[in-house]
Image 1 (tube, rainbow, N blue to C red):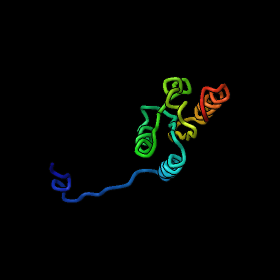
Image 2: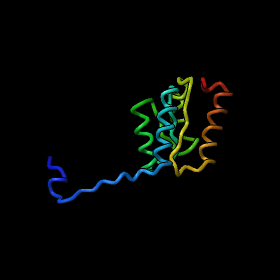
Image 3: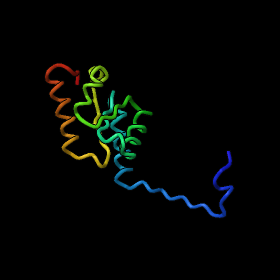
Image 4: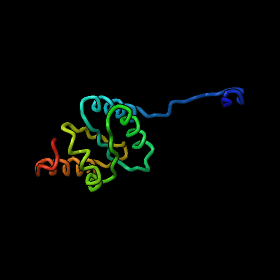
Length: 115
């Protein structure tokens, strides 16, 4: 496969990831190393959020959800995990993250989850 550099007289590469995204990814990786399951909250059409989920999947079992209601689709996976980490894409509103955490807490209190 030919490389782009073979067709170019000059090639410049810029790292366009912002500091906040880099920090979020670093913190999420650290959290993933301490838990059994990662839940990434955010839009599946967001490149930032889906990339975050991809990074975490290489470290730990990870699910990506848009809404708290989607937790129902992963109940069996969530039920098995004793320690769950939650992170979100940069554009995910705080209220959505809080709704997911609240829903998981309610399920845990009702005995539906182990954590």
